[in-house]
Image (cartoon, rainbow over all chains, first blue to last red; front, side, top):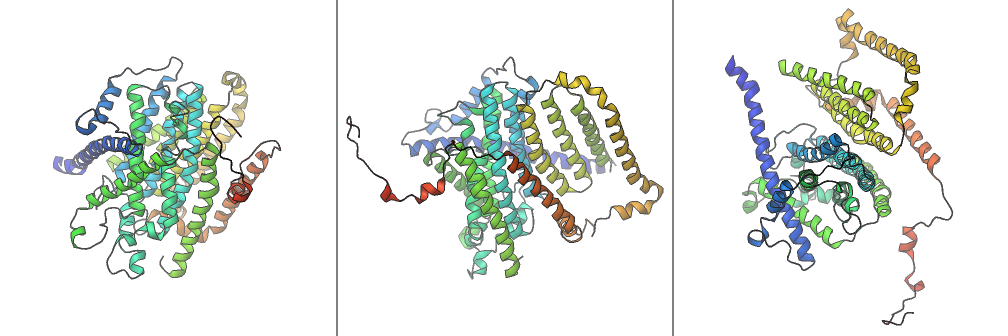
Length: 349
Length: 203
């Protein structure tokens, strides 16, 4: 009886706990170096050196920052709403991390692989706005509050076009399971056009090309990255909704932001760049493990985001809203219809 | 079974408690936050019954969009709530009657299954069984075949509401400068005069 109880209730929980801790630690170390890479790329474009003091080539810079944040004194403004003020960074950090539970980094390598994985990720990313609104309101100060409103409006706007992009992918795949979405890309447009081996031409980026661009730009806007970093435009505002935050609560906001960026890179990889599939399915390439390809593609997307950040000047707020509502929304809505039309009449559905 | 009922009672009790806090808490923003907690636990209850799609849609639509709008409005309004609460008790009869009607309706719907076991099967029968077909497919099949007119009607009502809201708020003030992107892009380069300005001289 005890053995059965252990097998059915205790053991699975322990396994999930172990997987989650492993994922968390890997992800956090990854985020530390993503942050470092971001600063190094930004510096290289501006012909500066970037962080190069802590550790060899500045490799330990992120960990020094971590220590600095943790050891500082957390300050809570006297008129702040204490409970909500402290809950906001927790919400931001925890939500960003929890979406990673369903991301398959290689075949079968995910903590959970639910049928509606994509919808789960979408639901979690639509909740990330709460950390910002709560933080902005609870600080009880005008600037964080206004910044929170701007930021929330921005995230909600671009969520719409991200949703439509996901629907076009869903139409092509016929499933919301992230593993299914990757395998649907193993034989796609390239194979139909007569390419003999499965290759990168089969992935969705080619078949759904406009949507790939829309998703990439929306992902940047959704994560409040430059050139859409209006909530915390460094040269004009101070730090947006995070003005009143210091020490560990600030660190949590910061961490949540970067984990969300990594999530968007992973999602772009899964939806459009064939996940863990090798670039061409022939001998030297398909010997490499799936995780290698997944990380490589994710880093490529991140590199593109970092280049956009360093090259493109910041948008004005009304231009941002115009792009979201007047360009991306009609375009993605049209593409949903066009994709459904093509699938139906070519008999590919 | 044991774990399922444990989670059911967990979600159900938090739902009821946070629903109570929505009307009991003094700060309206806290009310909305409790409402969000209630939505979350209702989604958990949906999950337990196997309706994953409804659970996630509840989170996306209600928590991710509707409650955000609630928060926006509540945060920006500067309402004195102690003043609002003064005439609170005069609404008690109306509220009580509405609550009573809801309770009676629930008893009528759920009670039939206690009287006759078959009634419940007729009322809620996933077609086909959820073991064979995924959640979305079952809902889509029903929504786009049998209930297509109701579905379209719901969409039409939302469209009318949206257009109405836009018409009510849209106003073109004549002396406000607006950027017309098309005009800017279509501008003929011949019309633009270019001056090379020497330092210290001006045009």
